[in-house]
Structures are given as structure tokens and as C-alpha cells.
Image (cartoon, rainbow, N blue to C red):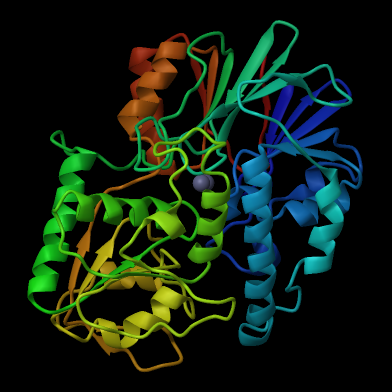
Length: 447
Ligand SMILES: [Zn+2]
Ligand SMILES: [Zn+2]
């Protein structure tokens, strides 16, 4: 393993002699069309030995079928839940791209088909957490380590001879409601490739997940008393299930009145998979089945997509989390936010260019454009934001790196100011460690 190349939206190439291993194959969620793909041109066709995938979020698995078309017959290795959930995500992505082809006139969409997805499935290999395996066709031994981010999410440790490199993927070092805190290697890592998502965010010193949860409960209670409802826009994978179980806890703890919870969008489909694997993955509440065991959940009925209708004194957990145009949360919000009795609770990340961000930063009385094809809505509802991040805080990430004291740290998955924060801190805390800030297509020597 001598070099590492960054090939764009969460896809990295590790090269050693003749061996080539690609880690992750994401799609940039903020871009459309071919621009959203990593630059796969850096790897000659059919030359990669293996593709390892850290988890099933779009920005890590979204372009896998395109990569596999260029790397035919290459083994794809991941955890079983990443494969099963990832498959559902990719099939959904075919549907989204198919409708965007018409709406946005993007000729290259869909970039892959349902049939193609079925055809590549047999080349996917599943490996358990903490069980080292030899990457086929190489001298590299790899292992997956629970990353605590979403179901199946893994950090990936690779060893060749006496050298080791560890890729964190997306990681959370504290317990979420369902996801158990990451269980990562604590020593013997020469090169650390680390995510830096939250490097620009300074968490208040008195932050606790529990207090944040109580703050959300207070908003729910006050909205209930005002005879309104609460809309919580959520990512389909991860946040939906975390929040659903949180609603169950709050209602059990008597912190919120008994009120129906509605699920909508892709989130329901993914929740089925969380339940299917409820006993087989590292998580809190093992065996607990969200769709069956939560009595306040209004179970989505039948296979056909049901129109979600408004009622007062209810909670709506709808995807997408950034309220992208035409998703369930976006459409539902047009009239919802015009009612002063209602409240919108943001519980995750919203990209600057998204309707979610516009709503989150709007003030009462503002006109908010949720969809460019319909007139703007006037905001009268309460809007609040909560920190239930599935990513580690910057301090937690920095402390992890400082414990490992690797020879090199490569900062990925973050914006420039975020990476600057880490670089500055590590210059003081680990002067002996080389800190690398990759740009797309940049090549590094790992050792
Ligand atoms: Zn992720
Ligand atoms: Zn990510």
C-alpha cells in the first residue's frame, strides 16, 4: 500500500504494488447528473482488486453500480446490513433519477436500472464486524468495526505487512437512541483517514443528548397544547428510526402526551430492514421492532403509497431530511408551515442550497420557497433545530486521533474550514504527525 488517491465524492483508492482497493463509491448529494460522480477515470477499467463499502448512505454507496460497470467482476465487500439497506437505497435512487430525468431534463438519468442492480448483487460479499479477512486477490487483511453511525456502518482497518491504515467512514462515538457508540481500534494505526463533518461546529459545553431530547419534548408538549402538530423532516436511513424510537421513549417516560406518529417516504421501507436485523446488529434495544412494538405509530398500511393527510395533535416523521423538492416532507410542508399552531423540528444536517435550510433560517412572516413550481408559503409555524447528530463532535474526533497518534492523518468528508480546525489543533497536540488535506485527484504516499 504505497499511495492513496482521492477520487471525488467519498471514494478513495489505495494502491500497493499491483494491488488496488477502492473504498466507498459515493454520489455527491448536492450535485445532479454526471458531476455527482467521483472521478473514476483514475482507475483503469477492470483493474481494481476489490471495492470496500463503509455504509449505505448515498454519499458512500450511491455510485457503486456505475463503478461496478467499469470494474466488472470485482468483489464488493461490506457488512450484510450495508448490502441489504444499500440495495433498497439504490433501487430508490433509480426511481428518483427516473423522475428527475423528465423534471430536470438530465439525459444521463437514470445512471443505472433496477435490472442492473439485480445483476450486480451476486458480486457483493458480506463480512461480519471484528472478523479480519483477506481481501481477495491481495495481501491485504481487512476488518470492519462498528462505526455507531447508522445500521451496518463500519470503519475499515486494512493491514499489509507491518503497515496499517484505518478509514473511519462516518462515525459517532456516543450512543444514539438505537445505534451503539463506535467500537474502533484504540492503537496500532499508522495512517488514519478521518471524517471531519462537524469540524466547524462548536458544541455548547453543557450539551447532552438527554437535555436536547427534553427540549424537543417541550416543543412537542407546547404544540400539543396549542392544538397543532409537529413535522420532523428526517433522513430515511438512520434519523427516521432514531427519532421513531425516541418518540416511543418520550411517550413512555411521560414527557410527551400520547399522540399518533406518522411515518412517510422512503423511511418506512428502511425501517422494515432495521426490524428485520434488530437482533443481529450491535445496537441498543436488541430485538425491539419499531413497526410492531411502538403503539403510538400509525402503521403505514398496504404496499401502495398512502397520501399523508394533516390532523392536529400528531407527529409527522417524513423524509427527506433536507426537504428536497417533491419529497414527502417537502410537499407536506406547503400548507403545514402556514398554520401558527404547528411546529417544525429540524434534527439533522441541511445543505445551504436546500428548501430545508431556507425554512430553518426563515423568520415568522417570511415567504419560503419550498418548491419552485408552486407559490411560496408564508411561515407562521414555529421552527426549531436540535442536535441529534449521527456524527462525532470535532472534539471527540480529535481525541480519538490523539489517542492513536498515527504517523499520518488524512482529513476527508468535510469542508475546508473544518479541516483547518483539525489541522491547527493537531499541529499543537501531535507535532510528530503529518496532517494531509486532500483535494480531488490528489495522490499521497501513505508510507
Ligand atoms: Zn453517513
Ligand atoms: Zn457521509
